[in-house]
Length: 212
Image 1 (tube, rainbow, N blue to C red):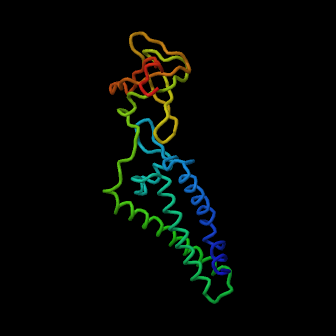
Image 2 (cartoon, one colour):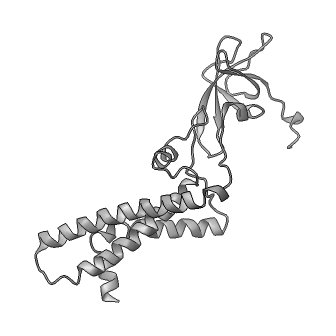
Image 3 (spheres, rainbow, N blue to C red):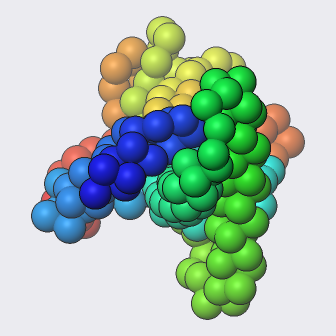
């Protein structure tokens, strides 16, 4: 037990142990319905990955929710560093620089293994993974937004919309037929103009929402 605790709270495993605790706590909240598996996913106005989603996409892990990818990375890194720490603890030396050097090697191996295992799992199950939700320009049509920065007119308008990942993004909007929408009002996106790359909006009447 002492060897296990020493490895878990020694370098380099101690870098991953707190992360593992957070991950376990997060999945407890997911199980009880208090958290969403896509709470860290985000996209920009073009429907492209942003933030952590963009970073993981560049690393080849963009086909799964950010929370799932991070969970796999942290768990594998913790396990590999734990095993490496236990093995290096068997080295008969009292040299602190040597022990830290061995720890650095274990840390590097753990990070590489975490990425390799996670990316391998993603590639192996890619054909079975459902298509990720996105907020492309076409898919924003039919949704509501809130007018920001003054009024929305035929020649100017800026609105805020919440993506499927929960991120708030700003989009350019325009009205038609001389309609003017005041600041803070809710508008319905009914079309996208590819020529000007703006969204066409009109006043939203909650009473006409079939979801109400």
